[in-house]
Length: 355
Image (cartoon, rainbow, N blue to C red):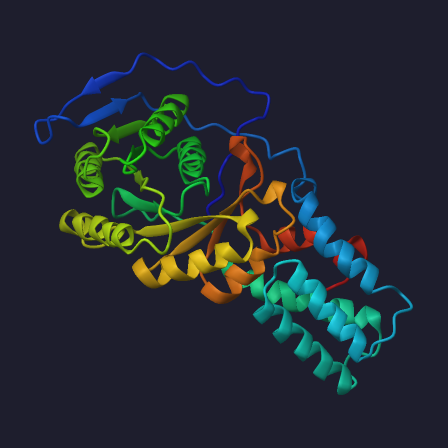
């Protein structure tokens, strides 16, 4: 498993030495901001519990289920209808809610669920079975180098911030990291990535605003291979899943990478905003169909009641859910753990039951 070290919350950001600008002959307008490596260190786990971070979703999902599945509740058709409605309202998705409640209803009719305790246990297991197959941590093989991660998503999903946090995690683990500023449409995106690079002492490859994104990524991959960098993380311009021309650009970026490394990118990670609810599911579906994803990260789960979307996304895509974002700090990008996530969402009366 890929166990990252985490930064202490009260630890000051290390001072950053003066950046040197290097312009390789291959591209006269290419800029590589280079910083020296940072030694790997051990960091404490986040002090804020996941349940606290997911407070609004906890209230929405566990509040509804806790009120519905009281100790004296009678198991009948009305209860299963209300259970389905509660799951849908919590953004787990109509498909997931319908399938789970139909199965529970049938099991009750067969006499397998005699009381509410058995129903709670069966519900928890059904939800857990959706999440568990997607609990796959990011793992970096010894070869090839660099391991290329292509980050995609719509505007505002938190993609560039996620890149910065992920770069910090990887570097703290002892890997050398390079960032490619492939979002050439927004000058702010390039600057934001450079800030993360300076903060984490990570090299950033960029060109001017409006440059060809595929060219930036190509130059970055060339530089990363020449320098023996372990991981290259490539940012891309945020785009709606309906913008076919921009989606085609992503395909071009992947084709250009393949000229240098036929196996790249080794990870195509979609970053989606959990507060978008079912819209996030639509985005995930369209991106997967257009370019082929290998993993997902769901951000902004700390400020929304729509965290149930994690169930809908994992159920439909069957892709690894690498991380969940539950805050602004670097250690608020947390590796996804199915049992931890489920325990955070469900009330103690459900979470205490064995699955």
